[in-house]
Image (cartoon, rainbow, N blue to C red; front, side, top):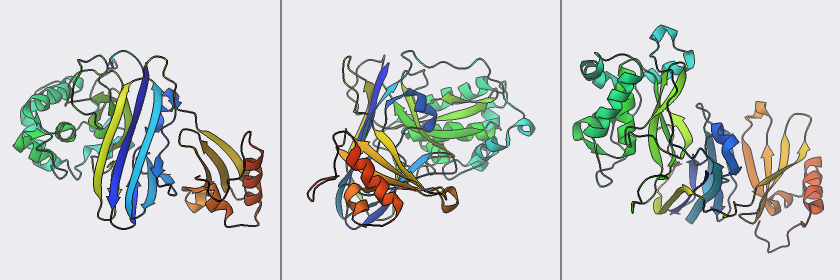
Length: 356
């Protein structure tokens, strides 16, 4: 099934505001990508990218004063059947868990394992460890919390969701994974897209969604206490200990979100995918620095990407062609970028008024 995903977020910034964005599909879905979800900004600003400690792709921008639009559209090839569980579902003794799973046993910003440990063992300790126990937790959370956008708030913790019995998908995920951790089952928070493919039509607006993964049977497995049923078209964007690790945007200043639109739906048969992004290597220095020319036909833009060597941090930055060449540097990278742009089919250096 061809799945179209994307978003448009518009922020109003009273002054120049640094932002960290986590808005790309996860690298584990790369084999499904037919056209990539390249972050587009309007007005254009330089975008630097890095991977955080959990492997998520993060983008850094400095939003100018006024309104800035962040958007993308991608096309993915996903299974057209509801997701299924692996056959293995046993719970590992703590002493046998892989080292990198142990952090997901600990309490975190929104997941107070210390407050919920006694309750977790009282309610689920008698059940067989493993998938049966995790599913029982999901069943409980699914019925215990009433879904309500009106009661949503960004500071609600798992303990508060349990007490207040209302919330949105992040609250379901936080409560369920906290109960899992309290029972010595590693659990991590996930965010991304979930389509309504195969479900009755709904008037509810599309949104980013939250679920969690539990480490069972030697692998991470998906659980969704909000929907509590297999879905068709689940697309991971990021993973972390809880929502604090993987906010879609972290803004270092006063901002107002004035538009929020999310798309996740099967592509219409015969619909043309977004024009593919092209990346050409222009120059690689002896110390490992790299310069690329990135053409994004769907946005009508050409950018120059500089990727410093690993010892310098390896954080990529992107510049418009005019911005890069206006430096008028004498280094070989400038000559290589200029040559690549001039010799590309149908390409040429932009004139003074070009919007690149």
